Length: 482
Image (cartoon, rainbow, N blue to C red; front, side, top):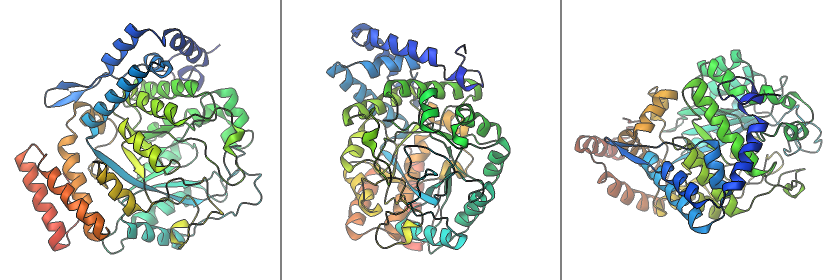
């Protein structure tokens, strides 16, 4: 029997079933233990440290106790602390991105995904480089600067060489004032050599959803194809880091397995990365199973309601305080709004989950991976964020300045990252307002920038930011950053 060891490189040892089951039993036994819950909540609170803040985070057992707790006032306190943590380390900024689907050819048999091999009625499509270029121009015309590229797993149709060629194409599209400044990559688990190639291509974050940490369920949900190999998939982040990629993104597909099991596994994976590599996940995503072609989410009996979903997000923020947290257009505007409060720091906007969807006037559905619940335009999302008190940020400065991996985390953990991220967000928002925003969004945006500039504590930083924003408005200069 495998023994739990967060420093092990073997999947069944750092994601250990016996440890998860013991954790769930401990959480259930202590879900009404008010003294322990208060102690855990106190530990999770952010604390002043010099000019910044620090946070202890929580172990997977501590966080699991909070997730099991059903006491209303304690849940509300979780939400309050999650919001405190998010504001302490990320401020009121929300990073904006969009997915770009390159190909839906796939050899896997994943039962929850319409791209599965046995789905014979979905239209299969793979973008040519000219089509990639057209999609990027369409995204740039919206105002996007950051993409997450997506592709099915197919060594014939989507080899690593194709992915690398697409990345090169994306970075070399310069349309009007548009540039994609960061390409994150969500493709299947691969080799150390291929991760090195992705690193050399200049990717941002490598993203791979575990889907489920429960091995038996994982193998049943992935009955055929290379993704069936639980260990190879679960150990992918270690290979990515060995290949030089120091920003990696985790996630599970909530609704496939019992959510408390998934949650414990997710936090254990974050602990493992910190223990082995000295840096935890750059991002954690929280998708839920959604309706799609050939897929009915009701076939999975582990669905979670909105309140439980919100509590999961809050507990992730308490457990892994420095990670970026992502919610996509899988969720409705109402759900995304409530999740912003409990720690979400990145959202997609104007998304299309079909291959080649951005160049189509009407939203196509024949190649979609899942139904998009929030179908607002990017401009509508940007304005909504500002009207709810958030700064929409198109910033990619840390990535391009080499502040990745442990360098990013050291800044984030000290709270010092706010000294550059806040003005960077305002400058990229100014770019968006000048180049892409509707008149109504411009009016809201310039007023927000005026107010937020006054909040910058360092006079020298504030003055430089003001001068740069004026240059953006008056002289068509772009890409200022601290």
